[in-house]
Length: 262
Image (cartoon, rainbow, N blue to C red):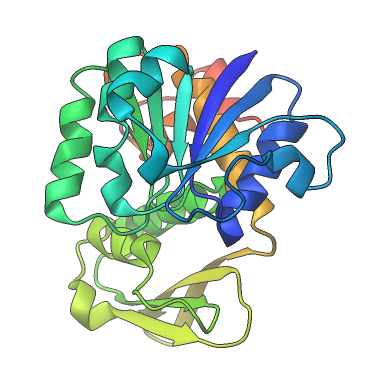
């Protein structure tokens, strides 16, 4: 049984909590949120389960110097905000590993996350779904095959999302593209998340698309990452590594590496 502490209980965080509770190999010990809403209640009850699991805590009420000693977890999963990394730095003293799914870190906080990786295992992915990592791998491979192709990245999200998708920025970075010139954003309706990489070639166009239909995809990805990182030593890892996605030609995949679970 993997004991998990969750940061964030918004639209995505609450769905992630539900996926953790449903997994028989995981136990949601607590949920940390910036808002005082529902503090003292249990995530399980709010999400329609009959048992008590995942007490909701308000960050401002917590003494983080003592909290992790008394409420140790195997893995902290972060779906909150970039500054939350400052609130779980003491957890690594007690062996907690970190899975961060924050889409937009500033340089200060990403360096803080890297610093934590010198003490524990940290998996960082701005989009932790299985499918988006396949999209990035396929895009890198196609760029290698057609290095002169024109490439544009289109990201679509729900109307209320303000920032440019961190996943789209990561794709641009992986492909060596100017983020300000090649990332196009669309905000409409209630789209959970859609990313498209368009390759323009003479007389033809190739499109690689990933779309999340339900936020449960993020929870399933985070749980997979949490289980994977349990066996890892200190250091910083990516979702691509967790899925054993190796760039074509770098090395041959073993039989075990080819067996990627879903």
